[in-house]
Each structure stands twice: as structure tokens, then as C-alpha cells.
Image (cartoon, rainbow, N blue to C red; front, top):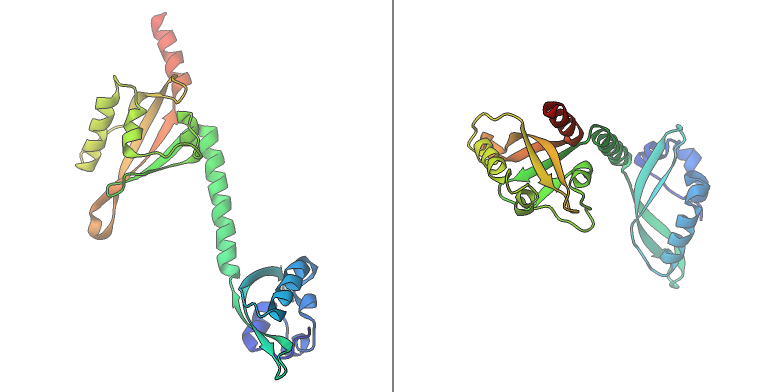
Length: 232
């Protein structure tokens, strides 16, 4: 089908003048990468379908653009399919933000893995605790099979160290000064491992304490090396 009418907003999204769009095939505008999507969508339009769909393509200005198309099928007096009327919403900025966020998350995960440093977020009004990818690795757990909670967090601490770790969290919540804490964890395979905990108080609306964020660093190798030197 050919484009018969466009507004100025679509011209801005496509990076083309109105006279360059009208009379042109939509397939030419969005490029061959979207041919499969368009073919299926036009088939659906003929059957009366009006589901939204998304496409990304190179605009006339040479930049990648993304848009959501909200179509309405049009039929003539005889009930035959006569084309589509679509509302096009530019989501390029949102898509770019999502890409940047995924890249930032990827770099953070890589950095934490290199540093053997995991992180967590603990909200006072929720039982579940958010763990970073590296923190799962430190504890020998998998996000597919293990859901961290406040209870399981302390259960993963060595019994001989559990009381001092719990006290640290209580002190943070009472806004008392605390230092980094070294303690042992019990991994899922039963192995003991030394880690170092650092945490900070989070504040919500009106500056009220809302939770705790922190890091857990794997210091097992350093700790074992230090103990060997002390035994000599």
C-alpha cells in the first residue's frame, strides 16, 4: 500500500519531507528489516485486526528511530479492506534510555565480578531482598532457584557470626555509626567463605529511614593468606 496522507509529526519522526512520504510505499520508508513485520500487520488489518506494533529503522536524517504504530483498519462501503489509519508514537528516546540502562547494568555486573563485590537492597517494609548477580555467585546461589529474603540472608551467615551481623543491621537502622564488618557465610554447597559487609541507610520521603543498601565483598583469599602468615 501507498502512503496517502501524513502530518508534520510523522515527517519529523521519519526525517523526511511531506512530499517525500506521500505516494511512497511504507515498505520503502521503514526499510527491508521491517518487511516481515509489515507484511504480517497488513494481513491482520485485512482481517480487521488493530493490534499495536513497534518498528525501528533508519530515518531520512540517518539516525535510528523507534515508533509504536496504533492502526485502525479502513473498509469501503462494500466491506472491502481499503487501507489503514495509524497513530505513530515516537519512542526513540525511551528505547535509547533502555539500551543505555542495559549497558550500564552489564558494565556494573562485569565490574562486580572482577572485584568480587556484590550488592543488595533491603527495604524495611518488604521481606524480599534484591541481590546483584555477583552476590548470588558469592553465595553459590542462582536467581532461577533462590529468592533472597531477610530471613535467608541471616540463615546464610555462619552461626558463630550471625549475632554480630544482626547487630550491625540493627545499629544501621537506629542510625548508629558502624564500620565494615568481616564475617563468614555458608554457601549453598556448605563451604565457608569470608566476606566483608559495608552498608548504608536509605531514606525515603521526608528523610525517614526506608531501608538499607550495601555491598558484600569476597575476601576469602586475603583472609586465608593472612591466617597462614599469622600461624608462622
